[in-house]
Length: 435
Image (tube, rainbow, N blue to C red):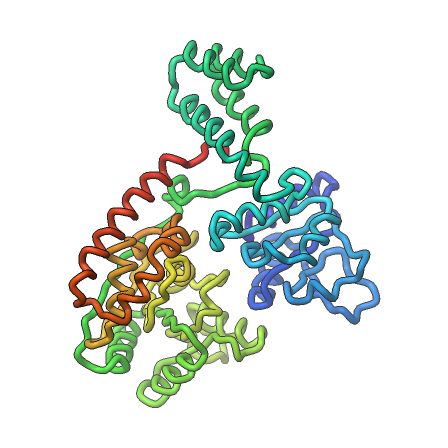
């Protein structure tokens, strides 16, 4: 997403339409944006400082500083990273309204449900998308247009398509004429221009970019021994193979606990990444882990990165392809964020996700069964993750209390599995070829 945003910005600048740029990003990703724009596009960004009398043309604004912008602040191009966090942000809505061009970036536009996507579109262009109700009302129309586009792509009979387009768009005779001539590319382009979300929403689907991804596998371990022994043994074994490992946990307290253990019991070089560290410290630790060889006079690169949930979004750690999850989130989208630190463009190896399951830990066993056997979320990104959580989340919490051996758990898991298969099928069938 960062690279595409930069490419769009460079193109608009060449056309004279983006001589000034504002990038809004979560504070945790500020360092990454500074480095990426300078290294890849030779366009340095300046970090926003409310005390500066005059702001530079290209500025990077931590999202929690939006309220401190001058009242008249505007730029020709506004880029917002991880935009799904800000669909209700009034300061961002005002800034978007004053910007010449607006680009929202998100891998999970529907993280808050379908409503969040509608509200993001309203933030993006309130004139075109005035409210969620209007968008929902248009949903049926867009589905009809998408269906016609699929039929055009599949090469359906030209006479049949001509009749369908005459019926669907009586005031747009050129569409029916293009259908009759079999000029599918031009026809699809005009549909994008005039109907649906194609001019506002661009989605890079993994199915179309599959050659850029190496795939992933999950390995689970039923433990009789202590979780700490498992971690030490696995890290030592992977280190002996020359492998780097990302270890993810939920909280800073967990990072502290496991860091102490590894420092006391091993000689491994362990980097850490958590909420208590400054942005500079995080960036230094991430850089230490991402290095493959040490520069002269530097210490050996870290072979392990211990990371809390704050590292589960937006960071690139594909120098590793082994991920150890010492706990499991309930929400499948959070799992995908974790795996996505390694399973991303630029990864050259299959990603291996290691999941230890200590004996007697019913909550962890239930979550693993839910994510793996029910949703198949370790094997692929789950487009319907939020909907699945809304559908089954409360029952999941109940089974965490009852345990995996409860007599109803097997039938519930089967119900989740069948729902997932149908939801995946619906998602594939409903892919809009105009987006």
